[in-house]
Length: 439
Image 1 (cartoon, rainbow, N blue to C red):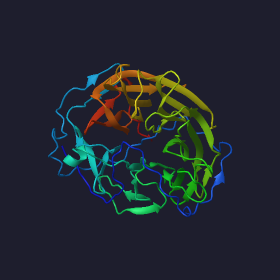
Image 2 (tube, one colour):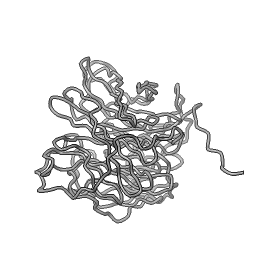
Image 3 (tube, rainbow, N blue to C red):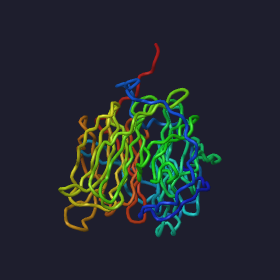
Image 4 (cartoon, one colour):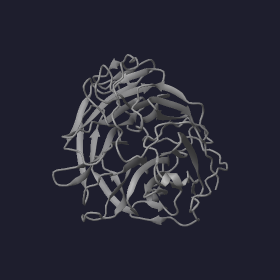
């Protein structure tokens, strides 16, 4: 099986489990770009718009030095097992040591210790092996790489290096181009969220406190448009995600976890030809005190944005779906877990004509119960509809997923000190390929 790996200078390595500490305030923030107000929808997302996660061109494969990984990362040819709704292929052998993995349409980007990154591509029998250095079993980087891509084949990576938000081109062969700093006020060790819409990249990131906002807060960089503030003055952010809901139309969702409560903000914006139009900030949800280190994961659900948030409730612990539409209206649905979790990974991606969610939860209510990796779908009302258990990994520390095409999702998760890959197919719900246009 072929693959390629690439090293690129990065920074901010550290154990992923504890949250990053707040830095000293900067004297001032980078200049903000101007934005139009987006008080009312200027255009409704088309009902026929495809969900986010369009595939980029296939990449070729080349040799790399990860063969030392036990299990190799190769998979034997076998018939995928069929569940109630999906074809599940894998997991089998580990594909890497440690975590910090980001899945995109053609492969995986791994953050490495020693300020580096590695790209491995998917092959016919699964992903190529990732990093295998024994040191990663003890510690791997905290911040992840974000990938912005669209159907045209344009791909860029974004990550935080020191206080810089760094961008690099990613080609179809998995090669990373020269890095470019596009903002210089990011919180070290954090993970940005990126997408490509309307022919331009949009990247949300956590910015360090400054003279305008003494809290760690959310900001938005738009290709060709500069940096905009997402968080209102005096409002903070601890985790952030972007969700495309139409051509040029995006909903930013971020978590502001505090000791006494957990508010979730949502802000709609539209990337236009010469400017970016921003709607007002909305507080879509307010939860109770957080357990552990919650993170919000955004996913497209029809023409709405679903903010997936594992959080303690009055009754116990649940995965919340905070569904926000283009008019700013929110619905809240929950899926109860048997018990609470300090680290409760969740991922989502579009395939099979719906939004598929993968999450780790305790198998039983007893303390210390091993975890299962479960698949669910999002209903039209925002309900999280559990479908089937896909794996029994023990304990999941990290989880990420992305669509490779309309009928396939790749899931990469870290259990213990090793990472595994799993392919989800649609089974009977497979989406037929689009008919050729023209006569």
